[in-house]
Length: 100
Length: 279
Length: 103
Image (cartoon, rainbow over all chains, first blue to last red; front, top):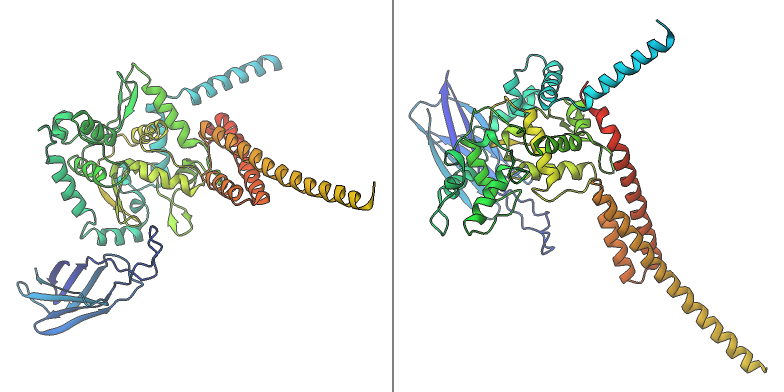
């Protein structure tokens, strides 16, 4: 995941680009005629200071390489946030980022 | 004056006017082209047309700027730079084929080669560099060729498009052919490029806002979200053709090269800002 | 001639009639496809081929291979009709593209 986090006026704004194919499971491989198996992020969370500050429940309607922008109250410059997503095939990705 | 004299004067005036339309110089064409858009969208600076539909649609622009926090073409650009700097098997490299080592030259393409009497686009020049150094040509329209072209375009960021039509050779004919292609209706839907991008610019075709042709060439190769990959201008021409029910042409065909030549000339004076992302 | 011979002659003529009508349709289909192909090539040369024509010609050839002659002819005729439209378009645009310049 690529992450940018900025703290201003008591609010931390976060922008995330997750790299993920987000396959719905309904697309057909033109060469083989087979359905491409579903692979999509189910949940993406952001933690700060041990607490979950943001949860997004994705599904098959979100397209490839989802871009997300959200904000939470609090945060502090120099502190870190932990982003994590898991998908329906059991894959997980974790990324830490420093709040600027 | 008599009716007859008046009539002949009118006819003569019409002939002059018609001759003016047909034999307008490229410079006059460009001025009329740019003036049309400046008048249609007052308040937009000339250079901002390089951002295409995002210069005329505020909501789309905000979404686009947000997405460009993490430009989707970043990885492709890195690969392109690496490919550009990798020497061929014979030890030479791309820099040896181009003026200024291939850096900051995008704004001069396409150019008209008076010796070979044909339009040379940047993609064509890249592949000719490969073949003249014993390498296989790369497939056009996407992939590694688009990545190399994207890298070269990125070294021209901010440079103003400067297409030249030489005095000798058939450069003017190529330009005119491109111009005619642009304005001719084609396909089962009987649309010309101008029907969407001039007459209906700013309006919607289904859910999408039609963008101005002014500024179209500046940001190629383009990372199109729909393709989830880079594509060259000829790749986009293919889709335009399909969308109006016309048969797409081979990349670097004369018709496409001449069209690119005409279009880029129309954007003379605008800054290069490729690669860029678009829907 | 007797009844048996008469019946035999009638049967033979029916059989040959049936064969004649089948090969007439097959050659009709071939001619239709050939014409469609020629017109399509002309539209390509004129620079105004439509992208709907190629699939029609391909499908017509496929129908011919499947011995579905009626379909082959129908598809080939549609391809020919569209090619003719494309040629009309090419001719018209030669003189009228100028009307699309910005005013």
